[in-house]
Image 1 (tube, rainbow, N blue to C red):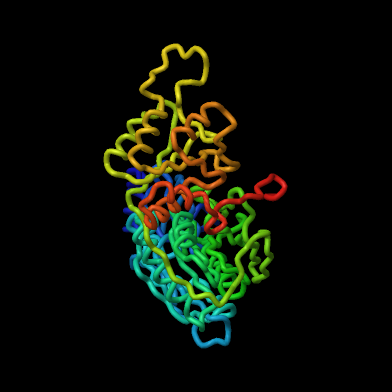
Image 2 (image 1 turned 90 degrees about the horizontal axis):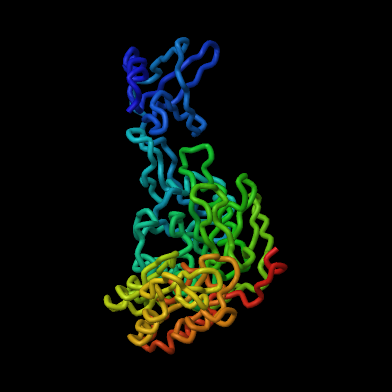
Amino acid sequence: MYSQAIRQLLKTVQAEEGDVIRISFGSAQYDGVLLPASAEDRDILVLKLPSGYNIGLRPDASARVEKRSSEKRVLSSIPASSFSGKNLPGVSVIATGGTIGTHVDYSTGAVFMCRTPEEILGTTPELRDVVTIRSVRSPFTMASEDLQPWHWQKLAEEAEHALNDLELKGVIITHGTDTLHYSSAALAFMLPGLNKPVALVGAQRSPDRGSFDGRLNLLCAAHYAGHSPFAEVAVVMHGSSSDDFCYAHRGTKVRKMHTSERDAFQSINDRPLARISSQGEIQALATHVRKRSDNEVKADTRFENKTALLKLYPGSDPALLDYLVDNQYRGVVLEAFALGHVPTGQSGTVMTGYDKKRAWIPAVKRAVKNGVVLAVTSQCLNGRVHPNVYRNLRLLSSAGATFCSDLLPETAYVKLGCALGRSSDSREVQNMLLQNWASEYNPRLTSVELK
């Protein structure tokens, strides 16, 4: 709620949130939709300008307010489009939700998901010059933080159908960005023998904002799905803060590294697959990629829901692992320190005051004895874990944990769930975990390679 002074100013012209107003300071005038007050400063009047950007203005004694429209501003119209009929590469679009399909709610000032898939496509009319969208499906619509493994399974099944359609050159999946890298890893593992490109694309800013990034992301995703030579699952998002190019990141080596910046997604321990310009130029960057083929794709969506990702922290209680074991979890990814360390209580000859109950090795041994597969990854993200560098690492390895080299924690979680879905034998699952299914491991990892 605005301050009493602001409320009184608005009351004089009977303006309410959602109305289009004009505020003037001498010769300077600002027209826009009145938004709710900012929680940081209730003496600042907030407008959404026609450009899509918001502006905060602090009225003084010279400020004049005029109500320009008594009608409440509603969702602006974006024409729906199917982009069909052109003699261009055919693609299928699978829409799932996320910021790319949102708009501002003028009653709260926040964004909400309300776009149909056709309206999402309508934000980027340039698509009609890149691909022919032959099918549009929406198996579910939700924020990506609410997705569960069964949603990945549904996406894999939808993608399988499109990938085996001879009229289609690729697949575009619109998706929320929060867990986009989980879904990309899941699809990479659940679509063995991939024959065409699959582009997952989202947006960090909603379509009503001047800084909307979804238009370029969609355009680059269309170039990737319809025109690239790759048969890889990729996350296609802004490569810089400007609207100049996108990166196509390998689905198993990508991570969201910023909460709000438009170039939040980065390839970790690997180069991006390609750089795609706003004009559609595709520059291959990776040295090992899967190419298009005539293979028939058969989705393997088996997944063990009793799989967990557990982050270690100073003072972390191994009872957390005991809890998962007691609740019949079959696999746990330990997001450990640096090279793969967990607290052991054996770092020096004298450990004054150390609480032995905080040592993790007994809990690890118990978990392994109960048939739980433990995968070790690093919180550092860049680089590898290694079982032999330090004595404590050897203790963890000897206890039965599996060190997963440069596998990202989120990718390890998804892969472990897939492996456990395909086998009930712990040793076989460990072996599968160490195999390279979809370039999730980079055996050529060097600082030179990644530059």
